[in-house]
Length: 457
Image (cartoon, rainbow, N blue to C red):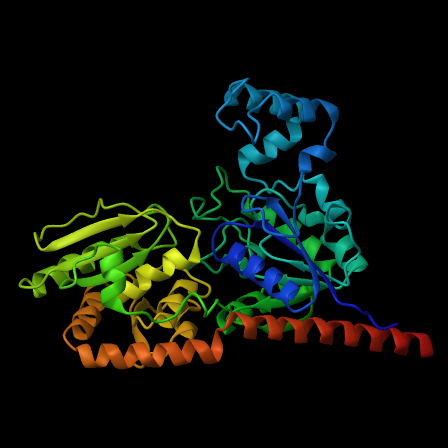
C-alpha cells in the first residue's frame, strides 16, 4: 500500500545546541514549510520549537525514581535546590544500583524507557522514523531493532559514535575496526573512567546486527568510516546529504556597516574562530593560539583582532597590536552571521571534524576560510578557490596561509565571491530538505516494491 501522506518523526538530543541539533531542527521546520507532517521529539526541549515534544524519561520510570526527580529543582525554578544534587545522586544510586555501576565505570547507559513510546509522545504514527545523534543521555539504543522493525528508520550520523566503544571521534585510533580492545584514549568525549570500550563495542554490534537502518552522512569521509564498521551490519541503504544552511540569514553584507554596528575597528584585520570550549580535545585551540602569535610577529605594523566566538579573551599573546575579543555563545543565527560578515577571514582548527558547518556559514557570508585538512572538512570548501586547507596541528602552516590572504585583498574578495556561489550551489538548506524528501520517498517506494514482490510469491 502506498505510504501517503508522508509523516516524519524526528528524534534528536535537543532543539538547541551544536550542528546535529541545528540540522535536525532546520530539517523539521523546512519539512513543515513544505506541507509535510513533521514532528520532532527531543531529549531536552530548550527552544520550544513548534511541533517539538520532549522525551520525558522520568515519566516512564518507577515511582521511587519519579519521587527523586520531583525533589530536585524544577524547570520553572532551576536554581531552587530543595535537596542537594549530591544527595539526589546518592538516592538514584540506591534506587538503581546496576545503572549507577554502569555509569560509574563507563558502560553505555541505555536506561531511557521513553524510547519505546516515541509515537505516543509525538501523538502520531509516522511513515518514517528519523534519528539524529543517539548519545547524550536520552535514547535507549537497545530499542533500535524494535523501532526499525516497526517503521522505516533513517539515521543521520553527525559523528562516528556508532562505530566505536565510547568516543564520538576516534582520531588516529583504528581499534574500532576489530573490537576496541585496550582503549588508550579514555579521555576522548564522552570520557569513561575504566577501559570498558570493548564491552560497549560488543553491545553496539549486537544491537546493529539485529537492526535495519537507512544511513545518511554529510560527507564521503564519514560514509567510508561507518560503512567499514559494525554499522555496516545494519545498513539497508545509504545516502550522502551535505548539511544545508539558511541562505536568507547567512549571506554577504556591507562589512563597514556591520563593523560599525558591532563596534569593531574599521582598520583592523579581523580574524574569526569559533569553539565552545578550549578544553574540547577534538578542537585545536593551541594551533589558533600559536598561529596568532606567528601572524602578529609578521605583521607588526597592522592591527590584528581575533574574535573568539563562543569563548573568552584569555588567549596567550605577546604582541601589543593583537587584540582578542570573546563573543558569548549565541543560538540566534542572525547574530552569528554578523560576526562572519564583519571578519576578513574565518579560521577553523580541528583535530577531528565530520563536516565543518561553520566553514560553510562563513563562506556563505562572503568570508574566505582557512581550515585544517582533517576528516570531512576538505569537503566543505574548494581549496585555493573559496579558502585554503592547511596541515592539522601545524601553526606555521595556518599562519602562512592567513598572512598570504591578509596581504592580498583582491584574492580575498575573489575567494569571498566564489565561496558564496559554492555554498548556494551545494549547501542551501532547501536543497538539503529536497534531498531528504527524495530519500524518504525512495525508501518507502522500495519498501512497497518489496512487499508487493513478497505478496506475489
